Image (cartoon, rainbow, N blue to C red):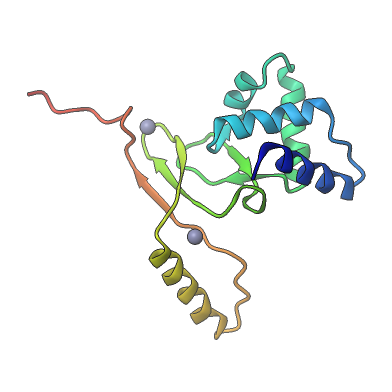
Length: 149
Ligand SMILES: [Zn+2]
Ligand SMILES: [Zn+2]
C-alpha cells in the first residue's frame, strides 16, 4: 500500500471511533512504515523524531485500540507492535532467539496453501479459523558468533 493510501485508510479507521488522525499519530505511523518491521516502543520513540516519549506511548496504545497497530509475540520481554496486516499485507516473522529482533518474511505459496489446508481441517471440527501465525526462530547475523579459524 502506498504511503498516502495507508494514511487515508488509517484516517477512516480512526474516524470510526470518533478519533482524529493528528500529526503525532501520523508521525508514529510514518515511523512504523519506515522501520518496516515489528518495533519496540524505544525504537519507535527514536524514529518518531521530536515527539515526547510519553506522547509516543499514549499514541501507540490508542493505535492498538483502533486496530491500526497490533502486538507481535516475540521471544523476549520487549513488546513489539506492527501495522495491522489488513493495512500492510499478510506476512510471517523471523525471530532472533538471542536479541529478540523480529523481521518480516514472505513464505512460499505452497506453505500458505498447507496452512489453509490445516485451517480447513479444523473447521470440520467446528472451529472458526480467522488467521494463522507461523514464525521462524533462529539466531540473527548480528548475534551469531563465528567459530575462530
Ligand atoms: Zn539477534
Ligand atoms: Zn501465512
